[in-house]
Each structure stands twice: as C-alpha cells, then as structure tokens.
Amino acid sequence: MKGKVAVIGAGMIKFGELFEKSFDDMIEEAYLNCLKSVDNGIDPKEIEAGWLGSARGMSGAALSMPTSLWDIGISRNENGCATGSDAFRNACFAVASGVIDVALVCGVEKMRDASGGLIAIAAMADIWRARARTMPAFFALRGTRHMHLYGSTREHLAMVSVKNHHNGSLYPYAHYRFETTIDKVLKAPIVSWPLGLYDCCPVTDGACCVLITSAEKAKKYTDTPVYVAGSGLSVDSWMRHNDENLSGFPASVIAGKQAYKMAGLEPKDIKVAEIHDCFTITEILDYEDLGFAKKGEGHLLLEEGIVELSGSLPMNPSGGLIAKGHPIGASGVAQIAEIYEQLRGTAGKVQISDVDVGLQHNIGLGRGATGSVSCVHILKR
Image 1 (cartoon, rainbow, N blue to C red):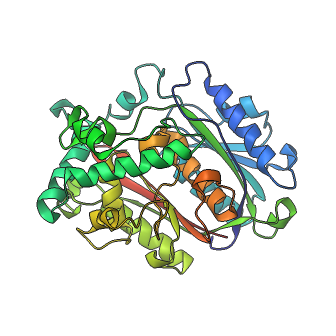
Image 2: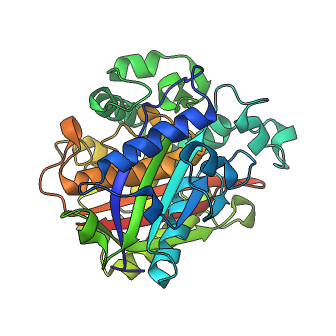
C-alpha cells in the first residue's frame, strides 16, 4: 500500500446532538462537502466503489441511498470504535491492488436517538456486562493502574481535557466548543474514579467522507494530494493477560509497529497526530503505546507542553474525541480528514506549521475486551 494510495478530498459535518438530522441527512451533507473539497472537481460517476463505516446494522445500500451512487460495489465495515479506520484501510487495499481507481469512504453514526442506544447494543455480547463493567469503569481501571505504577495523577488527566477542549474550541466541527480549566475538570462530578465528567468523550452524532484514488491519478484531482504511507491493524484481549498490567493496549503497540514498518518511519518522524482519547487516560496510554514516550512517561509530555498546539508534537488538534465527539463509525474517518487537512495546510485555526507526516489511531472494543482492536495509519504530504 505504501505510496500507492492518495487522499484527494474530505468532507465533514459539525458533530453534536443532531436530533434534527436523519442518518441519510448526515451522509448526504458529508458527501456533498467531500465532493466540493476536491480541488479540480470530480464527477461522482468516477467513484467506482464505496466503504461505509458504521456500528449500526445495515447493508451498503445505506450509503447508496443518500449519495445516489448506484451500480457500484459498496461494503459496510464494523470493527468497534475502529470502524471508520478499518473502512478506510479496506478501501485503500482495494485501490492499492489496482482493482479500484477511485473510492469513497464514509463514516457515520447516529448515537443520540438510536433505538436502545448504540453503546448498549455494542455491549450486548460482552460477557462482563453482568458484572457492572461500563466503559468509564473499564478505562478508570487503566487510570488507577497507571497512577499506581508510574506516578501519574488526576491533574495529568485534567491536562489532557484542558488541551483537547482548547483545541475543540477552535475547531468548527467539534461537538464541544468551549474551554475549561484544571480546576473545573478536577471539581466536575465523578463518573468512575479517577475519571470525572470532563475526562469522558460525549455521546455524539456525526458523519465524514473521504475520497481516495491511486497515486498515479491523484494529480488529476489536486496538486496537493496526501499519500497513505503506512497502515496497521491488530487485535488483542485483556482476557489474554497480555496487556501490560492494564496500563496499555497491546493491539495499539502492534498496529503502530506495522504502520511504522510499512511507512519506513519511526515515531520521531511524526509531526502531528489524531489519536484515540475516548477518556483522558486513553490519550496518555496512546503516547506510550505508539512510541511517542517511554512506558510510564506519557504524562511527562503534558508537563513539558510537547503535545499542545504550540508544542513539537501536537496531539488531537481537532479536540479529539473528548471535544470533537465520538460517533463510532465516523470517528476514524474524521481523524483521517483532519490529518489530510493538516498536511495540506488547510486546517484553519488549528493548523500546525510545517507538517509533512501525520498519524491517525483508533482503538475499539470487542467481546469481553475494550482496546481489543487497534488501527493506525500514517499519511505523508
């Protein structure tokens, strides 16, 4: 795949509690925004295949209806919270193989008014559900373990929240566009200690589309394509007793190594990243799992300001899941869209200067295990 696939367009809608918009409305808006974003224009008839990322059970026809893309192959991907990332990955493989020249990837989720709630549906097969393990509680275990082993504190968690809410306040598509402070985060109601209200991502509706093509055809559509340099996907389970004593996600470590190897790059080469921060502790663990910090030293990146917009390695300039929101199928595609904008220099108020390599990362849940799947992509200008 390395160097064979290029992103040529991306379109999002504002994430939030979109009760007034249907599933089709969200896809259509994101799709039209994506078409408009292609610098030299594109005829929808040139799109040869589509991939739909959504945790909601449906067929590929759910993408055809609002886009009027008929008579082409459309697949639906579902892979936990890494659904959108995996849909993008599969589309890239199709283009890299030469079978498809132009493909559409759409990630979408209706979280707020789905019957029964998608989070409840996703947890149905979880054998630990009857033992009261909720998502906040599971990630809280990671937080207390990291604190015990490595000396991180609730203040460090709060620093992630403050950073991401600041970034989100500048990002036009974010669900939460407000600033907060360390004091407010620490005094917020506790959800599952050490995680308070501002340590948790919101339940969000959203959609995002990206267009990809072969590297050979990319310049037909834009003078500034962004190329897929590396991709990794891995699964694991905390029930396999192989997850660093609850202080990391082995799947992220493996997926990251796969992506770095394919790209021929190292963590030090990454200039900007959109990483999975469903809870504040998750982002700190990501720093370590993806090689940006040594084990047990992720929180030090926050102390030193390295991961802020003005730092040497900005993390989640979009506000991350904490501020932008986490509509499961859309999250990974939206991360790809943000890295695409960053590398093209079109990210507006959250633009990082002089970036040529970016990383995107999702983790997701599976039967009996959160963090059991991880997907990583590396993009280059």
